[in-house]
Figure (cartoon, rainbow, N blue to C red):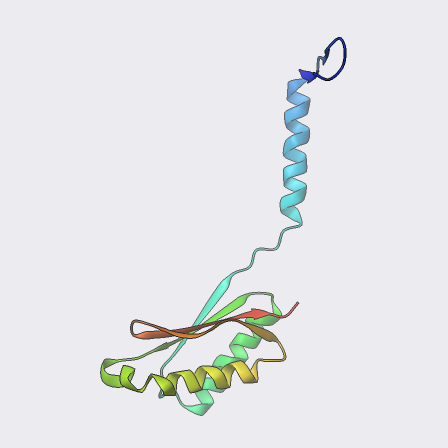
Amino acid sequence: MEIAPNATPPVCRVMNYGKYKYEQNKRERESRKNQKVIDVKELRITPSTDVHDLEVKTNRAKDFLSRGDKVKFSVRFRGREVVHSHLGQQVLNDIAAKLADLAELERAPRLEGNNMIMILAPKQ
């Protein structure tokens, strides 16, 4: 039942509840069909990762970004490497510079425990 309380006298309309629920589900399905699910793909590196391996990782990131996914780069520091965290930050800044045409920096490189994390999102 649908009620119009502002009308004088108040008006009530009898409706088919099954049909109402069906149309409501149909609208929800249509809205879900138009949504794009954005995944976050993670690529792990170390501060001592070789140049060629970094190129491979950046190429994978380009694929992910072109598909519309976000990319999370994490630099893992082992043992006393965390003392030289500036090296990891340099690596992440270089990657961000290489991918600047495809991606925008969503989260700048930040140290969290033994990991330094940076998130790149595809440009609109």
